[in-house]
Image (cartoon, rainbow, N blue to C red; front, side, top):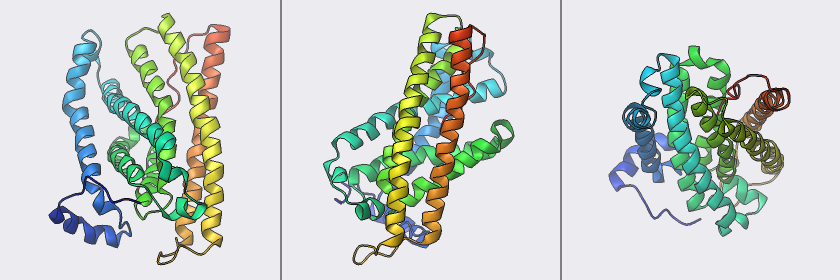
Length: 291
């Protein structure tokens, strides 16, 4: 567990330390600057950079969007950017972080690596932003998406206790499916439903969603349950406070809800996939929501 190379200033550290200690997130002050930088970037992308890039890339479509259509487009520009970057970064951590690979069950519950913590901080900038957006627009996106945002933020922020931090990073591999999902939404807005590109991307979406969220998601959730149980029945490492039962229950409940949503969304995607590819019916691939 190496200390971060990119440390915040002492002044920033002291400013956030009291609040983070009150929230029982002692690791967060050392990575708060990364979280805040990511949060500012995502908001800047949403209100300024994204609309200008969209107007340049889709000059006949984007300027004519109104209301929810504009909101959807701008949010998914941020989602697409985050999904692409975090998927690549998380994939690197899962494949090449040797310190993470050597962790025991208790170390996976109580420990972290610097690379994992950095990835978590950058991703949490998005999850904070996403939570705020789902709260502001709850009438548009519904309680389901707001509950999803709450569960995700709960799991990810508590990684800075630290608690199951490396599992948060491993779950970011779900974001591979959001790349193809956002491309499909963009093609739909561009009225390209009849093109081969639209159908091909739909097939890729179906396959990537299945492997990243159903296969990998189920595998990861199973091991998560096992490590949660192990943390409950075992003594914590020497000098470390035992994770409270309410937190373990909260992690198990949140993970269950998120994986249940993965199965629900996959069912919706599969139904549309079968309808469009097998029966040639006209439906849009936008029923599943992204994280």
